[in-house]
Image (cartoon, rainbow, N blue to C red; front, side, top):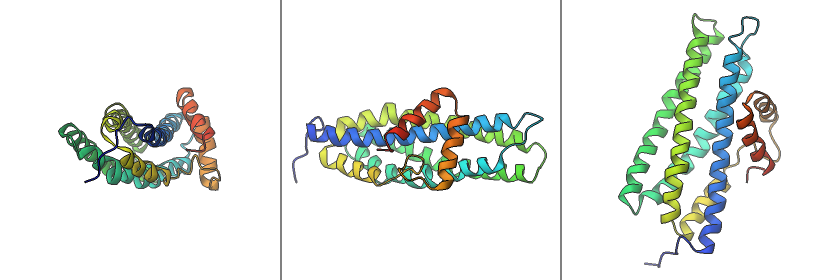
Length: 215
């Protein structure tokens, strides 16, 4: 069995730094979309304004197509198994995070259902959507903070160079269209609207991610 590389070696640190940076940038993107979605729903409560259903649909489709179908599977398939492999603490934490990922699907379904009710102008639909958006946002902010404050430090202690290279490769091939050099037109428009809607603190995160090209 080949000897494991010291996780603190320069080669491990280079790979881990790149991977962690990418993971955090993807977290920033989702945080900005969630904050902008909350702001958009809040604006929709103005009696003189109508909720921008097309923009809400674009935000929801972004969450479905990028974090849920690209970011989370990379964690589930590459990062989580590496952290869980060698320690009971890692296995327990990864088990919790995997269960939280599973909770995301029904919450997304509720967001989709609530948006459909608003499109049909059903009674109390905006309040239902606002509740679903708030619950989803709070859940994912808490989940991402748990990954950054607990999972990534544990990974830095445990993963060797080859494991970090696999994680780095997985996330390096995971291009977020909000931060891509050549944005699809839908995502270009979505980026601009999110930059307008997101609270100032989140907007700064979005702009810092865009400046790096998502890398």
